[in-house]
Image (cartoon, rainbow, N blue to C red; front, side):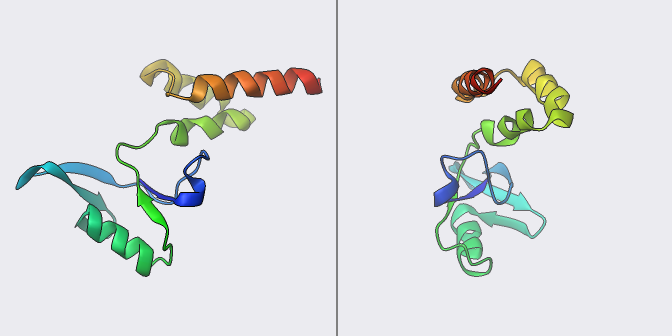
Length: 109
């Protein structure tokens, strides 16, 4: 996943890619998206130059909280968030976020 440095501590991302082991080097990965296949360095170079995000970073493996954490904020997505949590488990870091969100909600009500 491509994430701007300023978004590293947020539940946001810029682009998602599929990572696959490089057949030539078991320690490296290839990244697949709609533009094709690239190494991590090539992918970052593209995002830093062509997409004008000079501080883009590659997060691999991706923090799953980026995918489901924000869904709790939308009433229509609560069901989907619950289904994802049931199927894949609670993403690391989401427990404390859910605790503080519930606490804030109680103090407002």
